[in-house]
Length: 147
Image (cartoon, rainbow, N blue to C red; front, side, top):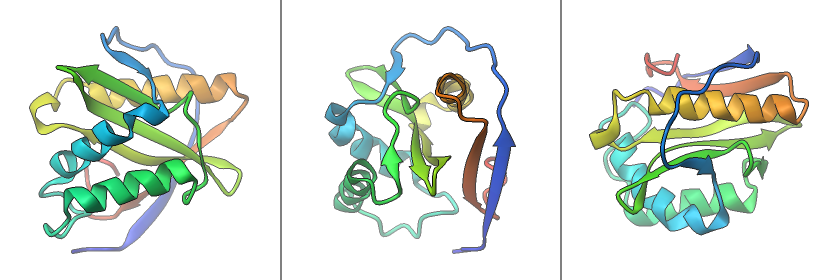
């Protein structure tokens, strides 16, 4: 697994958000659904080694909600719910006083529909409303779609 990471920073500007039924801010009640989404969304990706379990995902989501990566900003953190589950999410934390895209994930059955772009656009608009000017992302260099 390639672990070289790149830190990127976006100077945010407001953008139009596509109509997306089921899109809303994340809540603490979403933790189980987010943990279920994570292994499916990241399977075969550059940031996993293939041995991650649902328990690993639960622990990762718990660490995110507990603030291990900085305060989770629930308002800007965006999920899309469909079929009684979360099918896409962008989670934003306040890391070292700056907003950080901590996770972006989309279920494989829902990819190629613009959900990552739409959840990120909503997060950006919410962050701008909170007077934040930049958004950071730390990404594995081999993750070409994210870079």
